[in-house]
Image (tube, rainbow, N blue to C red):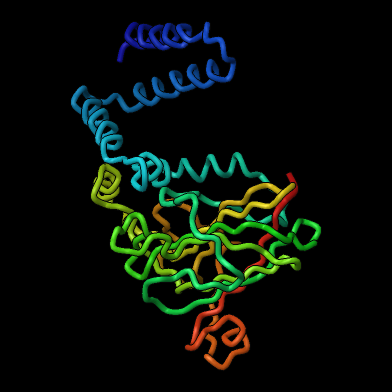
Length: 290
């Protein structure tokens, strides 16, 4: 490219940036001008053909068209698979070293799920029985009583209720509460690894780039307590083959839990009504103050 062409293109970028100079909201002005500069730099660097640019427009159009108001949010999936969700999470949740690390929210959360008692079973579909329990504490090691642990996971078929309409409403979802000592307990089934939706634009992008679409087995948490920062995180199964290649880059070593096999004669089984062998996962959450 000759110098005159480069100068003309640079002037165009400057002109578009200047067009947003009068934006009344300072933050919106900053975002729009930065977007223009970075987007123009990407185009200048990659020099797409007109056909390639139209293919990109069609991809984004199709991404929006496959979204719905309840479960399917393809733009979140796109953000996740490009690692943007994790970068935004990292920037917005810089916590003290002892605090539990956060990870991506994901596109399958549903609000208003059942309130569940300590140790209540949230599984209405078959799977390997599991008990996940531990304590919610603050960064000084003090118990956090009355914390709300909003929990969700896939069924053994790798799909979430809501996403899979054959599952009972509220299956493998629930709102648990820590007791006066900060203790929580969740009866469920052992999480399994599963593919993210591969039937849409994001799935086609993953296939075209030679990437797999699997997430390692995990249990989602959103934990809220008065005067503490809300925590959105996962607990991942130790030994899962996808821990090192999560399709959405969400794994952090501190969030990996080694489940232990327990017998039906274990005292925990009697306490929480488990009548068969089960997997025990133990994890303590640490919430920083607001």
